[in-house]
Structure formats: structure tokens, C-alpha cells
Image (cartoon, rainbow, N blue to C red):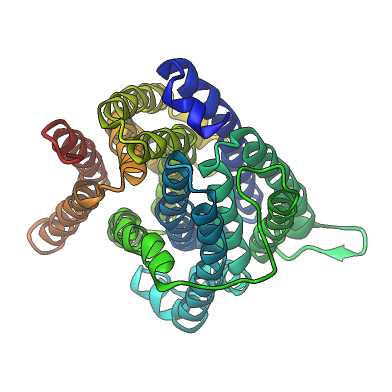
Length: 444
């Protein structure tokens, strides 16, 4: 859909039209991650526990590259096009590519050099630590491709080309599913690489998707075009992307920080419990792409309206989308709280692991609606380029989980029930804080 047409289109049909391709693509991505966990689950409980240690770091990178910095890119592109300044939008495209390379290089340096220390602090040791590193080292050695994929996808979505972005992400996901099976288990002359194969599949799939996006942006059919001649960089354009983007990165840092605190607490309760928590929390992380399916539409629509000065209509769009996201995530969480075996039994046949996963879903699942509400408003805030309160809400969540964790360690003995209750309390805090702030005028 043409971005300027969004200014007069009926709100709910426009949200559905933009969100539907994203929702489909993100559902396929959810299936991709579930397939990855299933592949690793066939390798045994130790490999699954190692993946549980490394997975929050992978999600941190994904949330920062697609949700935080990527959302800033999409919002900036949408606002530039809403103001009918295509030249500015094309300059932002070039600047975003350079930022993706630099950010990917930083992540590679951090996790390749400090990975053993990071996962040891999280409670990894012996074979579980080795499995976590086997996944992490391959993933972060090639993570520039993941940053580039998510940034370029954000550019395409910011232009309003939701269907194109979705199709390329679906192709990428299916390629990763096939490569994952091949590289984890091996076939014919190709040896099985175990958990490392899952990481390599993610890197190769992202590289393929990035190439497809580059070809699309160079084709001239997009609202902005990638020019490789007469490239110049401006400090103001970097600032236009980095100022909101770096602020937005505080939110995924807080979210993953909360997961890290919980992971460290659960690791004290044994590898079976850690593996079960890893399966359960994977659903929370996989809700993020589903919410992002709606959130990407909100970034573009709110960004276009704020760029054109239509602030009141931008607010209305955000609330409609946010309540839709809360309904979807609340339904998923409620369903799996009632029937947790639908999820737990997909990944393992070890009863102790299943029971930990069941308990997580029964306690945390009913609060997923608050998570969907808060996170979708966070994405909408990127379109409005008003991010203080969404970031603050993420920090409040981290504080609650961290302080609660310290109380459990030093004053009570951590149990699986009270650790998971902290997760639920953090989600409620996130949703209520962001919604209340926007209702009271945070975007004005």
C-alpha cells in the first residue's frame, strides 16, 4: 500500500492489510524457531539446556536489530515518506546499512570473546556450557547477516511494502528449516554438526534473505531505491536513526536482562528444570514476532500520520492495534495455560522437563495479554518517535525481576513457582505502565 494512502484509508482494514503479511511471515518464523528447538531436543537434554542458555542472547540480537534499531529505521523511513521527502528516505537507507554492519561486528566481538564468561555467569557449566558455546560461536561469527536482514526488512516495511517483506522472510524461514535439518543431523556425505548446525542454518538463511532484499531495493520498484553510486554520509542522518534507535535498545536489553535473571535462578534448580524453562520461555520470545506482525504495521501507520501532522488519528491507530495484539497473545497464553502439553510435548519426552514447562505456562501464560499490549505500544511509539515511557516500562520490569530474584536468593529459597511468578509480575508491569503513560499524554 502507498504510504500516503494510509492517511485516508479506514483504520481497521488498513491495519489488517498491513499486518496480515507480517503475521503470516512471523508465524512461519515461529515455526522455524520451534523446528530448531525440536532438532536440538532430539540431541538430548544437555543440548536443550545449552540452547536455553544461548537463546536469550540470540533473542537480544533479534529484538535489537528487528524491533529496536529496526523499528527506528522503519519509523524514520515512514515519517520521511509521509512528509514526501524521498531523498531523505534513500539517504537513511544507506546509513542504516552501515549501522547494520557496525552493530553486527560489535556483537560478534562481544560474544566470541566473552561468551564463556557470559554463559558461566548464567549458570552454565561442564557439557551444558560447551553446548551453549557450540551454538553461540557459530551464530555470532556470522551475525552481521542477521543484522542486515532485519534492517533491510525494516526499510521495506517502512515503505509500506509489507507483502514483499513478508514473502522474503517466509522464503528465508523455509530455507532455514531445511538447512537446519540437514546441518544438525547430516545426510549422505554431509556430516551432522549437532547444535552448531542449527546456528549455521540461521546464518546462511539470513544471508540468502539479505541478498533478496538488496535485489528488491535496487530494482526500482520500491518506494525508495538503493543507489550504490555517489554514496555520502551525514552526521545528521546517523543521529536521526541512532538517537531513537539506541534509546529503543534499552527495552530489549531490559527484556532479555529479565530473562537472564530468571535463567540464572532456574539454573540453580537443575538441568531438567532449566531445559523445561527454556522450552516455556521460548514461547514468550516467539510471541514477539507475532506481536511484531501487528507492531510493524503500527510503526508504519503511526509514523506516516505523525510525519503528516495527523497526531490524533495516529493515537487511535495505536490503540486499535494494541488491543488487537493483546487479544491474540492473551488467547495463546490462556490456551496453553489450560493445555500446556500442547507445547511441552513438542520438544521432549523427559517428564521432569515437561513438568517444568507445564508449570511455567500455567503461571506466566495468563499474563501474555499484558505483554502483547505493552510490546505493541512500544512498536507504535517507534513510529511516533516517543520512546521514553516504553523504555522506562522495560526498566521497571527488569528492576522487579532483579530485586525479586535477590530477595529469593538471600531471604527465601528460590522455588520454581515463585521464580515463574516473577515472570508473570514483570509482564503485567510492562503492559500497564506503557498503556497508562500513553493514555496520560506521553506522545504529546
